[in-house]
Image 1 (cartoon, rainbow over the protein chains, first blue to last red):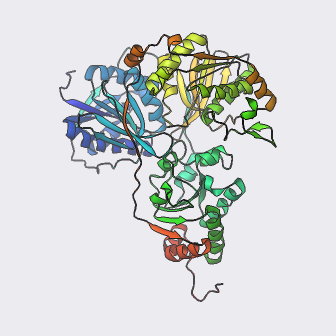
Image 2: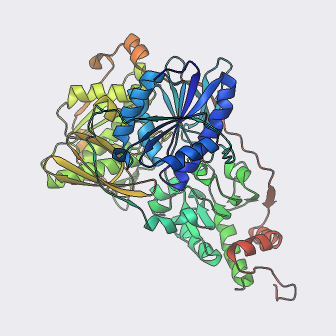
Length: 334
Length: 266
């Protein structure tokens, strides 16, 4: 295979479910914009079995080139196989940049790939740009809270980042678009995977959780204590919604880990989000990217959460909650 | 030393939330998983961290909970390491202090910036089979079976020892440190401290083999959104809010919350 002379931005095709596929499309869109600045092409990688659907999808959403390996042996996701394949391909083709969605898979896979390629990686970026000196500017959350860091990989290639889903907008589907599709055979002498997949199923119980709820009542440490926090359940019941929690609250034992909302927990997309006593650390707000209408209550008028909200109520979270419950009980008619 | 730690008078446990060197919560789950393995198999647990001298406290907590050995990698030369460098340094420490390990457990997340990259990168450094976000571990002789949930897929994986896993916070709820255990952990002087030199690392080799990423700037996050601000007494604010948004809320929840003017109102 002839090596391209043009610089290349690679986007890892993470396609296993709707959510994973969306972030791949978002990254292709961002890569197209970055590629213009550094005069590069956008190359989507797709490894799997019977993957024509994804080849068409990534083409229609803006990729210039597709590197595809379609093989029954790749029927299920395998970190080890993908590592070996990309290590090979990157060695032959020297990509300038590799972007990977910060899905669960991406966040396990990307660090290993970066290590194998002996290059840097920033985690869960919320912005990507090109610096004046032509480097990939990786904007990532930092210091556990409200800070962002501008990170670059100066001397090593490829420059790598995982990117938070929802950060960028995908380019609309256009089936008139064309891409160079390179269908490659699965390399022969790849090392045998040491991790065996014994069982594998789409999780059913997760389909009806907080992630799909249209109303969510989230509470943070500002609720005061466990008893007061529990009252959020009453509001959630009145509104037909679910309760979510921040990390400090989960760690304090006020709520279970499965309702943790944020970077390390659930990403939610309610039509209506009530946020009680939450300051708005990025680990939490990371999970709110798709919340449609936010009502935040916090006694600190400077709280980030209030600034993010559509309706910001300055006041004691627990007081406001109690009044809201009382008033709603009076007003609600089925 | 013990008296300086914040105790909960009622339960006799360490107030972790107030303790200065707090163990990363996901790592507590990883330690708990190790302790549970030890309850059923002959095992020896070494806990290891890299950090400032104060991080020793975290290791002592782990010793109190039942770990056998503790290693602190501590050197100003290593400060500011990114995950690429950290995983390399931890590999050197492991090779030095516990080269014959069977299993490495890491927290699946870290409390600071949650990159969650060190575990997977350490697996690469040590060339190990590995799995992240593990909820449940089972051991059958030389085989490790793990269950996990990844992007809405429930997976069961198997691999042979030695291996590396990162533990999620789904199971393995951490146990509490009893007073007696903690006291004796502070009496014992068995935290081994390794500096860069002990690991064969110099400023030059760290520069060459270490961090790949560089932080150019750190700044406060900007938040935008021109929003409606309500303040005042809670009851007045709630009424104002509901009057203003009753339609919107009612539409979403599929119930009417519009107040009829004729309704009785106090």
